[in-house]
Image 1: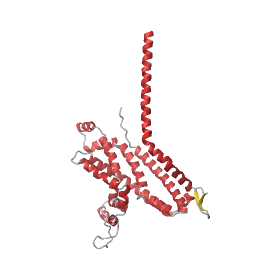
Image 2 (image 1 turned 60 degrees about the vertical axis):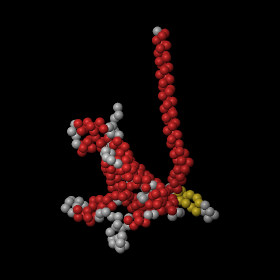
Image 3 (image 1 turned 60 degrees about the horizontal axis):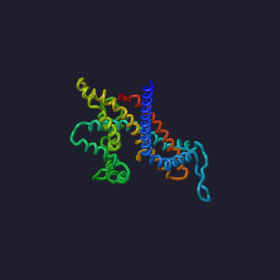
Image 4 (image 1 turned 45 degrees about the vertical axis):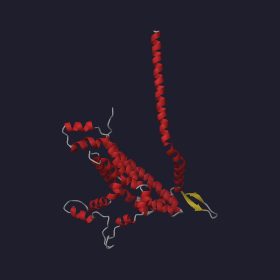
Length: 327
């Protein structure tokens, strides 16, 4: 009996030692994680957080210039938010941005998924094609984007009134199709003119869609490569067609990536430099005076709207997300 007790105690001590070792390993991993995000945390706490607090404070105050120099803040409550809502141009720009988002999100997701499916096939030069489709993401960031913004040829190609040789004409150089052409195409179909106009807008905006699909394409590609080939082999043995395999296997497995890409696309669209609402708020801020506090109120209203749209998109897409069990 004494021998059994000693054996049990030694086993218990061994289990305790193993638990301590496991806990220390977990603690090391946690410390490593905090170490990796430490630069962001310091930058956020020291730089961004004070700016956020000042922005919130300005949105509830008015700026009163003191005669001797300087200024003081006068509490106005929700007055700046009311003045922002009374700005008809701001409301119109906001509504137009939301309307464009309804078309852009599905277009970007469908295009990036289509390209990811093509680039996931076995073919010669696959890595080069992947790099080519991701190059626009690099070219539209940082200094390259600023250089491109001053590109005269790009501005001319994006203009709506000019002929290359004569300098005249009413058709845009960058337009691929027009609403009239689509209306003639849909003439014998029960299709309204608004659909033709929306399709025209998407096709003529294909350059921007390609530029904003690079990150989503990589995420979809990573999800496609994570699907086990054994699943496709089983489908082939069972006689499933490629169409059935896509809808029954591929699409459900990559549905979490669709959720991620949808949220990313919404945030990217709302915060891009070409966003009309962002441009309007920045222009109002640069006017100074009351424009500073009103633009702060507009920015926070815009932020809350973005969060609502993100929550709505996440809630809708989550209804169709399939999470594969690993056990």
